[in-house]
Amino acid sequence: MKLSNNRFIKNTSWLLSGSIVRMLIQFVVSVLSVRYLGPSNFGVINYVAAYTAFFTALCGMGLNGIIISEFVNYKEHDGEILGTAVVMRLAVGVVSSMAFILLMLLIDGSDKTIMMVTVLQAVQLPFCAFDTVKYWYQYQLRSKHEVFITTIGIVITSVYKACLLISKKGVEWFAFATSLDIILLAVMYLFSYHKHGIHPMVFSKDVAKRILKACGPFILANIMVFIYGKIDTIMIKNILESTTLVGLYSAAITICGYISFVPTAILDSARPIVMNAKKKNEELYQIRFRQMSAGVLWISILYSLFISMFGEKIILLLYGGSYIGAVNSLKIAVWYTGFSYLGGVKSIWLICENKNKYVFVLSVMGAATNILLNLLLISPFGIEGAATATLITQILSNMIYPAFFKETRGFAICAKDALLLRNIHLKTFLKEIRSN
Image (cartoon, rainbow, N blue to C red; front, side, top):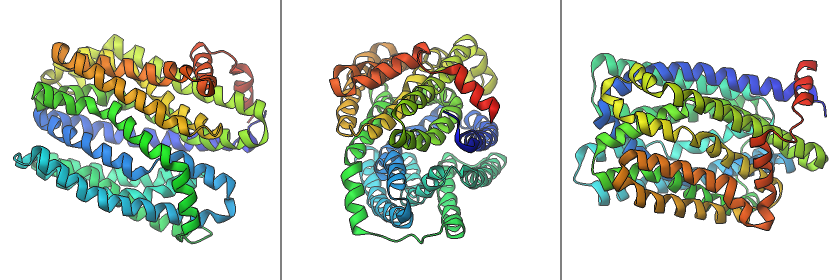
């Protein structure tokens, strides 16, 4: 039951501390940028970013959980696993970049601003392949290297944005900021692995076949996750025909995500711990899984309560009066955060239980639900309807729908226990932390 050498605590501390530093830097620059751009230009960037998210999900190939499992099961072949994953993602990234530009030409080719933003954001897709290195660090619980790299990237990108604000550049320059960050991270991850890795990155056909077989359902699931995570932004633009409303809604969703560094750090650090426990001790695995689930869920719930109480003041303080129309959608949407991160917990459970085939099934159900609810609610209720659709979708997808199937009902029970703080051995866990 004792946490081995306190590695989980130390690793999570590194992830949290790095995330806090990055969040503070990004927070200040983001607030100033959102104020400067205004709802309409901010809406353009986020409208294109919604499509970018689709191709980013495609480029990720659902590897975030699979590759950790690969490292756990084939630890002596980490160079082959990492090299193969990078090459596969790089190839998908190149194709995705071209497909993205072509798609936007067909949809919004007459809008020069949208097309310029599209090209500048499409540049990032091939470079996303190299952040696969971070999963190698997470597997080894050496996330301080990942923290160091990402923090440097954020600092440089923030300086870039600050220069844009000072020189009063147009929306296109801000659109390139995300691509700049991804490119910088790619270069630093390559140098970092060259320095710390024992085995060189090489491509293996056998590993590629094994990874493709394992991650197939997760690739499709990621596409479905995009649909019920980003389709609302696209539908707001096309149904309400307003980039300003997209900007208001995006401002609300941005505030919802400010807490993300905490549950993300917990998931990234706990993933290898939980997967290792599954191989060695089923009872410990069940306990650790519930502890991870409860931590992710309740931190998000407390944040949602805070935002619900002070949403209007937060909007005015951060973004100013021009974004006051985002208040109601913020107070609704913020409650989806906890259930959204349960989706990440669900993916870990499905991998550990070898039930990958249900990833796609559950994701399709979630995507279909979100599209239907957005069609029903956006037109009569505007961005508040989109926020309501997102909240209902996340609750159904990550707590209710898994209970529909006998094979996934175990996760629904775990999620309910996490929500009710049942069977998580909280006192024992706190004692372990103090003893370490």
